[in-house]
Length: 282
Ligand SMILES: [Zn+2]
Image 1 (cartoon, helix red, strand yellow):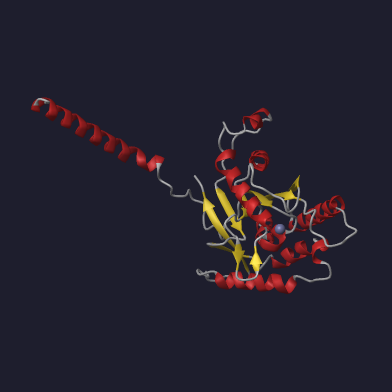
Image 2 (tube, rainbow, N blue to C red):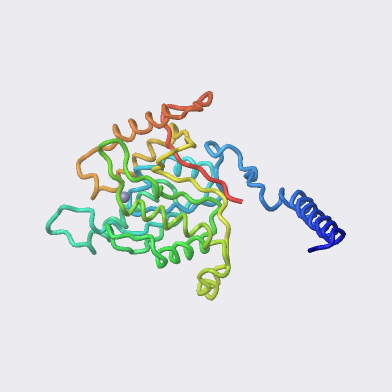
């Protein structure tokens, strides 16, 4: 049996420990656990400083978010593209080879980037239609992120599986989104992940802002009324994919629908918009 005096001392000591822990927690919580975003402004209207856009295929960005890219360029942003594949399966032509198509589509992407004012485009050369979000791809994307050192990542949505009754999202888009987000957090930030990249002089880097395009649950609408024409011109650079088809009407319709879907509809918002899921990491 424990003497009552000892029990009281033990209880008292336990209480002091609990109180000290609570006191320490109260002092440290604001620093360690506060997830309030740093000031960035309204993501719908703020122009980021340096952007890395990652896409599965040439033309993904032009279909989805090139109005925002064009607008940011005009407002002074520095934009870099990374295309994981070169779209070497995107043809029904029996005479076409994968190598010829990849070369053609890389040229089309470079032309689209020239029209948009994008500073650089990197092709990782992964085979089209076979993308997997594995560790090799994650390492490649960490390498690109640590080299470009963006303040903002623009990438696809790994949670978008289908939309409506007519659209199944391409598995490459899902894999590209998954690999991009996994590369950003935590591997680009963490020194001990992929130590071989340190040997290449690629130091860890934090990317605070993320705009996810083709988002299943958008929460940020960028007005592209002033840049939709540049978007359409850049999309038309992907001639191997469009053939004789003029995408103008469809892009305008998508832009109108996105603008209409914006629940905030700020005063003065324009006729066309692009939708994103926005995140801000500390
Ligand atoms: Zn695609």
